[in-house]
Image (cartoon, rainbow, N blue to C red):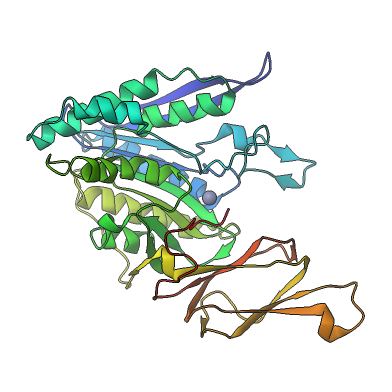
Length: 383
Ligand SMILES: [Zn+2]
């Protein structure tokens, strides 16, 4: 293949004789100074919609690369997480969200900017914005390359960061449980990312400067916003805008829909200068950008059977009875039922497919427009 390659990277497992394979697709001429895009799916390894979208993306990128229409590089991992991919239990349950060995959520606890890296960056900053970007990427990349991972999980994360830390744009493609489409970005990316939000046919772009969990996309984008805040007298752009896309629910896997989604993302890569082709029209929809602190995640504090009184997409008002938790061991029907009420005006973004719930679990997201006291400055993610 001209200007395209398939690379298999071996990740040593945590037991003698075990290993994983990370398959990396690269497209483009790789000219110095030309832009780089990075996209992967299934960091949460049981989330299927993104794998199918990137499956449909690969031949488009191959054709563009072979025609010499990609000056820089586009790196694609349709299945980013072989560790999580292999965690199938009893032909019934796929544990793709958490690493079984450590309990680590695969999309939490990512970090590129420890104090010693910031200290080194401070010594090289100047008034030259392009030089600052190059220095920051070099120092951050060298720090990742110098990591000496002990576990398969750490080796995996090092590889992903080596592949993506110097990209000019990053798409991290996920899905929710039962859900409308949405994406998570930092506030600095809105409304600039309105076109990309439309390309993903999202209902809403949820923005947070720091959602508190060290998600993969924030680990990349906030390198730049954190350095901007730390060094306000030096020009530092947002050199790696990134997003977590939630392509609806885990069961929303349709071949024709995914093919259209791939085309829309491909179109954005054209309009934003990663591919030298005319973009195709994006969906003509309106996407709202709203602070994640205005989205409530309703949780339950008692075990029981979950029943909903509202569907995904429904508008609700604060105080509205939206769900019940039912204790089947209670004889009195009234006592058995714990009503759950909406805590904000808004619309139902997501629900759970599992209907037997345990204390502390989140049962739905309600997207509101007013920042909630209970959410402000706190941990904003589901788990
Ligand atoms: Zn996910």
